[in-house]
Structure formats: structure tokens, C-alpha cells
Image (cartoon, rainbow, N blue to C red):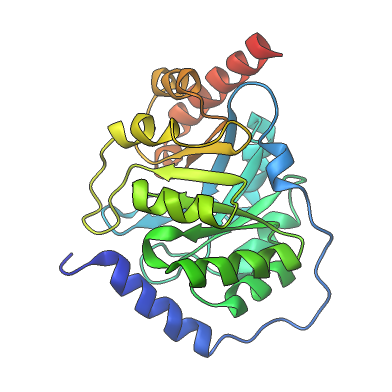
Length: 256
């Protein structure tokens, strides 16, 4: 893929936001996303993801409602749902399908640049949103974070380096996700998880994102101070799902 992926996604998101029709019906009550991640051990945010820019379609044949029920059965703390259509094969409607078929909090995962995206997500049942510091200026980030707060939603504020972490701390983010994938090149640099976690205050929920492909890595991240992991692509394989959730439950029992 040529060019800067993140800039491309920002442009596409703005185009979608301009023509977005926000549902007019009443949204369901908010489920507490942040509280779900504060349980002992390592909480797992399991993702409904059908494709990635690097890998194309991932071969997940089940519908979002079926996947959500399976994640809940396995012990997920929350569900992340991709709504970006161009590169991730997501749809806004998937939020309602996931929300109505499990009792877990649901996070809308997209390249959010406009308040209308957050409002539409809430109407369809999202309890939280992902905000990417790498693609937002400080004031843009502040406005979107406040919009989610006004709707009673949590925000997982994603950082990729110390500059992004400074932004997240500046707006008072209480859930910070460290993504070790460079969104410009799509390459993974696992060391970023350990480098950035030390700069996150103790009272902030810490979420590790990307590059998590084994139960052993889950244990390392827990030892480093993370409270939760967000896993998408790796869950395309059901064997790894079982391994990750087994380790997560083991960590929970050991820390309870």
C-alpha cells in the first residue's frame, strides 16, 4: 500500500462523516466499558474484524452476532466492533447486531474525526469509542473526547509514541491504549508496549494493542502493568482464541 495509511483513512473518514445519516431512534442505555476492564487479571477486549489492510479478508465467516456470543462465552470483558468499510469490511450496523446479542460493553472502532460518527455509534448501541491521537490534533482530540463524555461513553485513547501519550494525558484520558503498530507503515514494533507503559499514571487503565499472538505475550504484558488487551486479527484463528482466554482467566484467578 502506497502513501501514508493514516492520512488516507482520515480523508475517507471525513468523506463518510459528511454524508452520515445519524439514526433518530433512542439509544440503549450505556454499559460501563471502563469498569469492565478493571477486573483482576488481564481483561480481553475481543474484536469483530473481517479484514485488515495488510492481510485482506481474514476468513471469519460467522456474522457479528454469532461472534459476539462466542466471545462472551469465552470470557471477554468487552467487544470491539470495526465499522470502517473500505479496508476493514466493517459496517455501522454491526454495532447494533453485536449489542443486541451479548451483554458486554461494545466499543466502536473506526478512524473517528467527526462528532457525528460518535453520535451515530451511540445511537446504534456503542458504549465506547476509539480515538487515535496519531491522526488528531490536541484540540480535535479534546472535542471528540468531550462529545463521547457528554453521551455517557468511555473513550479508549490510542497512542503510538510519546507524543501521542502527551496528548492523551493532556485531555485527562482515563483509558489509554498503546498500539505497537505503526499506522503509517503498518509494521509492528512490540517493544513500544513496554516503552510507553511506564509513562502512564497508575490510576489510568492501560490497554495493549496489536502484536499479541500468544498466551505467553499476554503474561508478559500483564507483568509490565497492562490491565487489558485488544485483540482482533489473531482471533481469526479459533485455537488462539482458546489459548488467550485460558491465560486471561488464569491471570484473573491468580490476582483475585
